[in-house]
Length: 520
Image (cartoon, rainbow, N blue to C red):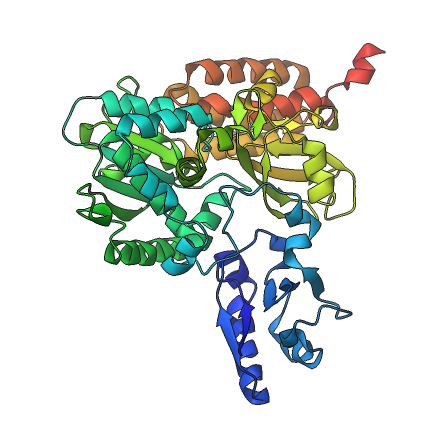
């Protein structure tokens, strides 16, 4: 009987030599006359351990990592192919019992790292397409009601209730409607969308298909950032297989309902992650923000009613239709129901993906999962929600991850990205980066964003140079106020979040007295 060995095939693992590891394992097994089967699975999200090689045993899958091609011969000598999990330096024991993974609540990412991403049989064997089969037995109104009752909110940043958005499109008149998936994952420190597309693409396809049935749309588009070529290949291969097997096409599982899906490559601009700029790009135009109203739900792609959701929102829908709205709602707190995929990046010892119910604190994430800073120095600031998210000082790390709790701090959860900075970070320099980022990535349509960000860079440069810093700080606050309330979209409207949070919590980095000095 052959031994099954798993070597991940997502782009993070490929970047650190997973293909070479798989090839060396195959060659070494052949040389030794061993019968093995290599399965290219997705990632578990323990990115500091990639490539994470797993060996299937009667007790469960035993992990070894991070494995380099040069480690393979030694692993065979130690008998890793026979399930050895003892004294080898790379041995991790049973993967499911690694604390980082064992303490998570995996709903959206239940299959990531477990299955072969492109095996539809594997997907079905692990609960895949049960949600779609249930959806085909319901009316559109019943599907929308289930999503609404689950409490699912957009995971792309705005946190708008998914069911309300779907209901608007369902009730919108018109024979033609669309489902658009925003996979333009451009925020720094975020990679959850990529992991879905590369490690469990069928769950996204299933979620979009359910959305189409729910609102009466027969065509969907996945808008993937051009920097994700491997994601695009995985999705296109999965779509082809799903179509061949009747899960996409003119009559879904012979139900008479149709839904077709295609991938579109993004235009390489951060602003195309904004939903209306994304629609412009999908239509073959320059990615410029549209004024609202009308809302995309009423006049979206090609002027038709359109559901636009993030990858994580759509990938969560199948479990709601499979296990019920109440099952999903039982996770979380307040108005933040279910789970949030959290991405740990920056100066952190254990970077990777964590999926936890809302309510966990930043401190728990940083130390219980992240293991503290990679440098070993004290953590100074944590940016949550991408490059336009606020910087949170240690005094705010015990706040539970909850949309409303973060809003009360003038912060956002966004896409769940967390970027960690130790005590060597210059917060004035990071604030300048936020303004510069906005200046570079602005679509240029509105003056507060286009001109405000450029002036913001100049003002912060004067502060850092010590040129009338007190007066410049007043000017910077006024400028942020104009951008916050005058910008057409969140690009300019949220750039003040990192700038003002850095200024408020770390004034000494701007040449201003600290809170303690002011009190004295």
